[in-house]
Length: 301
DNA sequence: AACCACTCCAACCGCAACTTC
DNA sequence: AGAAGTTGCGGTTGGAGTGGT
Image (cartoon, rainbow, N blue to C red; front, top):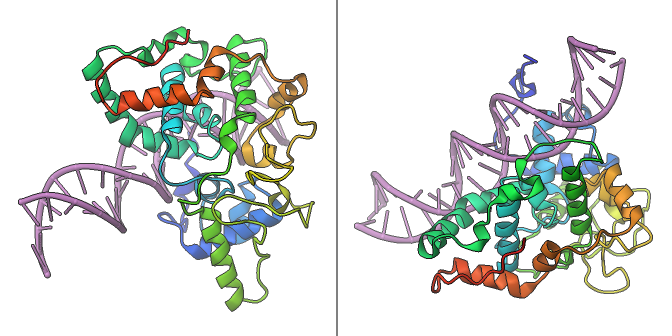
């Protein structure tokens, strides 16, 4: 279209975000919710382009992001899905709600690709490298027609992701980004008045959210990842009567996904069974550890 | 201590899809 | 219908951190 990139404008700041900028962005989103990124820099005074704000939010500040080492199970999921879907990181990330597509992409490029290259050279052609082209979504095309089997499959994947068991609370071995921001906000509030509202309902590590105080604020009111109590969470449980309110705003599931949600879960396919099978993931982990180069991962299709 | 090579990841860029008018 | 504007995605890169010499 020949339109100049938004970030080429004069006075737009680039580079790493400062804690102050993070606070401003989080405060704004806490109040207004994510979306309408165009208005974010205008309304906040941030000297950042809308794209940069969105990226900062989705890749770093967004609640529920898990940081730190990937588990062998997560590795297995990524490896398998990459073999099926190709480099469709957003689709792969939908299976790992706590990981961002950027994180998964980085992890693939810096760790898994090397591991698999080594493993592949040791074991020739392993079933894990099964030809992705045989799978409908491997083409990487995007359409919106629900009659398209490719899209149907994608929707099934999204539904699968919603009931993913991987949404359980991680160990506290990693530092939550929102925990950091919460601390920043608290420090900020000590020195500033008037201050943005505190992120008081974020707990460290995983977001062990207390019963919502302000239900009108989706950021404060979602219950997730406690791993305890009645909410046991499952914001990814399609069997739940009530869809978590934050899902659309924070998880990116759109109308099509809601439709699927209402239709109930798709039948459990072999890939789902495999993905949710810890033993299979361990097999992938074993493979990547190059223990003996033996081919032990089951062929799925 | 200084230098270099390497790793890792946050952020940028360009493009395509999508939405609005 | 199509131009203009917005959002999302994947590839790439810059630079901070780290380890080796």
